Structures are given as C-alpha cells and as structure tokens.
Length: 73
Image (tube, rainbow, N blue to C red; front, side):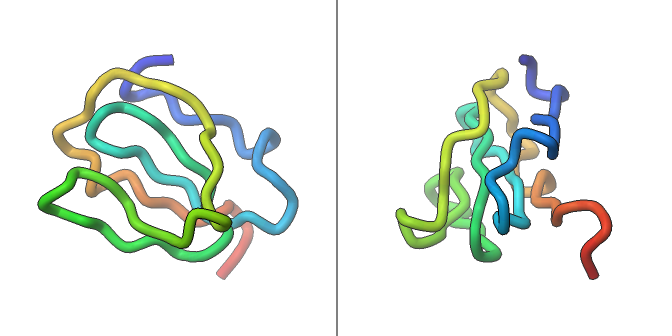
C-alpha cells in the first residue's frame, strides 16, 4: 500500500465512518470524526475510536486525507 492507496471501505469496522492517513503513512479507521494535530502530523480521536487500517508511504499532505464513509451525509 503506498501513500495514494486508500484502504477499501469494505474492510472498515461496522459503524466506523471516518478514514484518514497520518503523516507517517499509517491509515486509521475512526468511530468519531477526528481532528488534525498539525504540529504532530496525526489525526486525533479517543483511542477507543481509532483502529489501524493499513500502512502507506509517508504523506506530507496527510491533512487532506480525511474522508467520510461513502453514502453517508
């Protein structure tokens, strides 16, 4: 998986509606909408509301990766 390969939503835990990539390339599923921690290069959410989704290449544009599960409004 590279920086531009996005994890497949079919792999997301049920009820987890957010996906984002940290600057180091790790992708996470989120049960609540995360917020960017610009100084740290990571998305922040309660630890119980995030789960590793995959590893990609480091991404300096990480703060543009947040997406909501398709089909939700």
